[in-house]
Length: 160
Image (cartoon, rainbow, N blue to C red):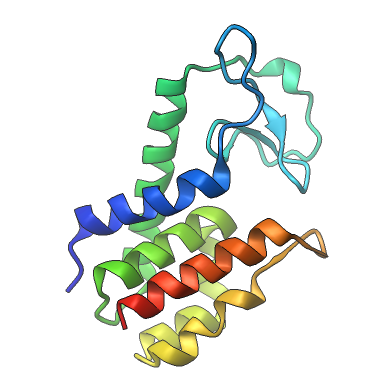
């Protein structure tokens, strides 16, 4: 059975370099930006709105500490979603990989995925082969998503 605190820590460590901090001003503040598909985002991939290409001027800058708090909150939300959707026993690494996946693509996408169905059937090796299928944003294959899914897959398999 997974140690939830360790899994959350592993997921944060995995997410942080992939998300990075974008738009750091000369004042040290972190400013909003549009993600690759146009959603207003800030900090470590914290979604501000589901309205594509919404004006960023309606959002204020945040500190590094606030960015870290948003990341922690988003990771915890993803962890709760994984906990709700996955009934099979998971190792810390498997749980962490699924948390990062859900944080990045959304819990709703985990819910409808073949990845989830295979994990819940305890077909872990087959499930791991599903990660590389999730490398597109708005129909475009993104190299960063290819690397991220490979890292999630490797972490998932490390616990299998």
